[in-house]
Amino acid sequence: MERYEGSHYEPKIVEESIVVMGEAVKDAPKIVGIPSGVEGLDELFFTVELKDGKLAKKNLGGIPAYAVFNVTGVSDTGKSLFVEQFAVTQAARGERVAFVTVESPAIFVARGLEMRAIAMGNEPEKIEKNIIIIDAASHDTIRDNIPDLLTTLAHVIKQFKTRFVVIDSITGLYENREVAARTIVRRLFNFMKKWHQTALFVSQKRSGHEELTAEAAGGYAVSHIVDGCFVFAKELVDNTYKSKVYGKQVGDIVRLFRIDGCRLSGHDTRTHIMEITETGLVKILGPIGKE
Image 1 (cartoon, one colour):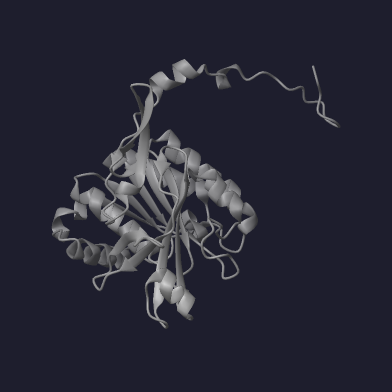
Image 2 (spheres, rainbow, N blue to C red):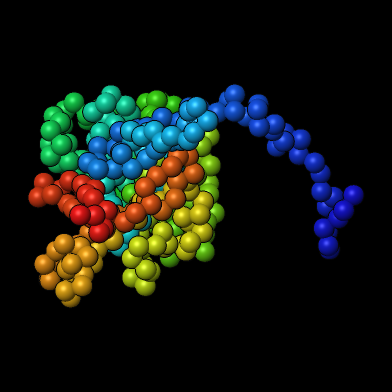
């Protein structure tokens, strides 16, 4: 038996880790589309079927269930609005959502969710019981202690039977200790998989990061752990070339959106124009360059 250099530990075979694919497939949940509540997003995901010996794309009708997505971008690009729309949509469908707020106290998040609900045409009182807020912003022991956060979240999932989790933002869980980012994100990712949750992790970009990459605070390792990334960006139209490409006037701010990878389904890989409406709703428009 091989030994590790400088150690008396003898490696062992972990039998329970070995699974035949056919057995794993029997236990795997079916991947279906979850309506996001974000106009223009749901049709960007698809599956592939084999019909008469030929491959055919089939629209998934939403983001894939049980996926864990990183929602990354610099400030003021619509990340929080995006996840609030998602949470409100699930609540309006009668689903329970665990919303972990790391940046802003629960009372302010609740007000923002109320505004989003009204803008989406939902009566706030019809969704209030379906969104359970975990206030990590006001409780250091949850924000700074991942085991406490996971135990609290597990309690909420069991008690309220939630199927969706939003964390805004995951960056706040490893603020000033980004060396721990990969470990923290991995633990949260594994937790979501164990409890069969569909989850969105808001992740802040640093100012030196390229706008349209999936990189976030903590480095590329953060985005590599999750199932996929929603990348948000904004750019100043400061010359005629950009004006032509984006279809905007010089001096305008253009917002951009891109899906950077998805393990659980196919997806549109193009960069899309995005807008935030006057009522604070995110909309995904056509891809750049489309006539």
